[in-house]
Length: 158
Image 1 (cartoon, rainbow, N blue to C red):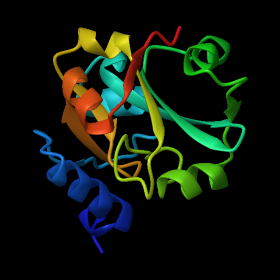
Image 2 (image 1 turned 120 degrees about the vertical axis):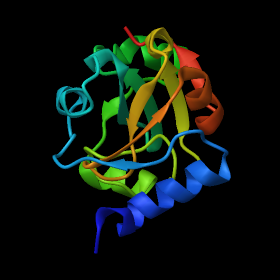
Image 3 (image 1 turned 180 degrees about the vertical axis):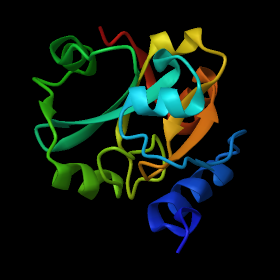
């Protein structure tokens, strides 16, 4: 089985196609589990990498799509989202809500709706790269398209 045949990558590819995304999934020869690894593999700034971070908001999954150059101020984003707090999600929680493993969580292709927030900082890049369901799979997009693909809410994360 090639990585393009991986179930999560197929699901993400189908979701991108169904939603009219301009980019296609690209398979990297090495892992891109971190923003730094992805940036190095793609020869782009770390800020152009979309980190897909899943948090547990009292049992509800909250996905924050942030620039690889940022840390998320969870108290600030929780207040903006109207939830008491955002807790770090367990690997099992992430897989349950996204169908994907940490290190490859895509902004799309989840089994259900996941409340999503998108870091304004990503708008500074003409092209941003997001995970596509596996640590070796990514796809290019734009900030505006990322908002449209996810139905996400723009937010300042830091």
